[in-house]
Image (tube, rainbow, N blue to C red):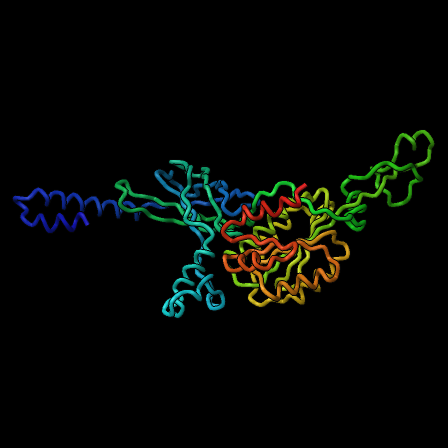
Length: 421
């Protein structure tokens, strides 16, 4: 632009000093372009990532980059580019934007806003610049980069496009080169709301996860008596002093441990959008708040097939359930018959059941009534908007707690306080 302006204004070479500025600008542009084209970099990188991230929470990771070239690299910048966010045709054709039906007919036909919404959903994060990077990397040496990332969506976050920018001395041009790295990923856990220690009263059952699980991790009840050793007894149960004194191997026997076993049932039917994501967050909040050292916890939902994932004493860590929730996707068709059959099949060993609905309908009301008619102890939470909230106010349902989509944190804290211990 500067060169163009000075060229127009500096037509009188003998009387105008602007012509000199024009010459200087053209020379600077030419030198900068040649310099940038001539800059080369051969780099390899290795990312050091945390095991998990969480939606809306900043995390930090580092990258070790090695100069594989024969020259020292100076004055460079590093960026992490997000993956291509464009959806495939099937996703674009079958995934409407939340609230799309409210747009005018032109927008509904052109689908521009659906396209931009899907890209934003798939992107996960914006372009990242290294907050700390070396100014020079000698040939064969390694430098360390630091990036700060705030995930925008739950799920698998891919990192595969590390780039180095090589500017010219004038700052007019820069050459972009890809750093040779492996494709890495981070599991981004859903957003969670603080609930404190959450507990549902109920009677404990003795089953796998009670006595067997407590023994497997070395936790037992009160001491009962000594008995003779039997094949298969754990070596840690042997009473070595008594064996040394009597010459007969004996073991210590304890009372069985009883653990309450809860179920969190997630309704995955309905379109994608804010209400479904809030339902995932509510389920994640309950999972994160329950003490799985003192109970067993099942996550039950219908996806491509029926799922029941258990965490707790001697079974799996609580983070496993959060990983599963990070990948749950909505289904436009509801199958409450299959969900009811799954819950009833698993209900024999459940102390209490929490049900999370992303919406409210007659089908969901009937599903809940069917479970309660079988004698199941259920508590439900429903993500509502203004219209469905008014329905609850006019026709309240026992043990069903509406959570307004715009104030889930407040409503959830009030509802959960009734069960906190």
